[in-house]
Length: 101
Image (cartoon, rainbow, N blue to C red):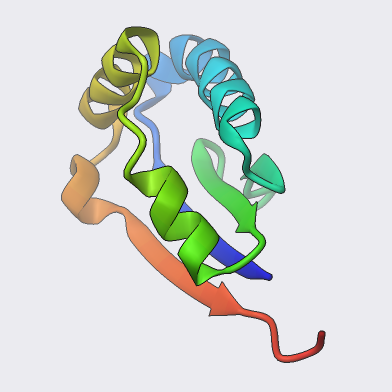
């Protein structure tokens, strides 16, 4: 299993738009073949979100990453970048590989 975690903060004025958009983005990720696509909010830090996407392997992740996003997902992702505090450069990305098979 290979997991990608992305953590970022959304500006409070965009919270409701973000929550609607991220549901559609997560659904699209699952439709493409992610093993799972979950989004969590930090209970101790409102508007800090972590996306967790699971893949069968690094190769599976690389294959899915090469598939062009639909027009809707590309538009939503672009808007999401505008809603992030500090923009995409402020996002923390972590790659995790399972050590227990």
